[in-house]
Length: 95
Image 1 (cartoon, rainbow, N blue to C red):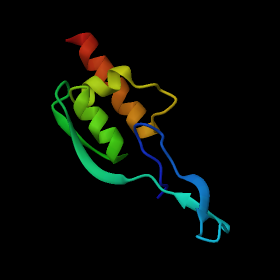
Image 2 (cartoon, one colour; image 1 turned 90 degrees about the vertical axis):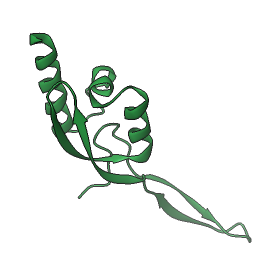
Image 3 (cartoon, rainbow, N blue to C red; image 1 turned 180 degrees about the horizontal axis):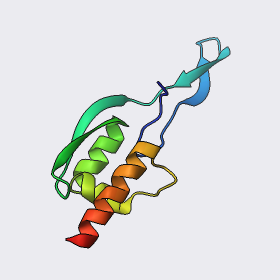
Image 4 (cartoon, one colour; image 1 turned 90 degrees about the horizontal axis):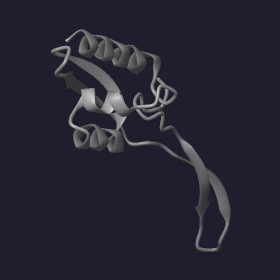
């Protein structure tokens, strides 16, 4: 299971641990990933996704999964999320 957000593409970053004596050793900064179920109002069903806490706040700010997917870049989305985005767009076009 990769440590990458399915909606934003946010993944691990690298940096240094810096000791009091200013010794530097490599470390990884992992994203705060959570397993969540998000509801799509257009499709009327839920989707299980593994997203970062910041992405969850953004989804809430944009008015839910449908609002987030409308503005999301296709390059950032995982294949599963891209499939969901296309389903939502298709349902909104027919409605």
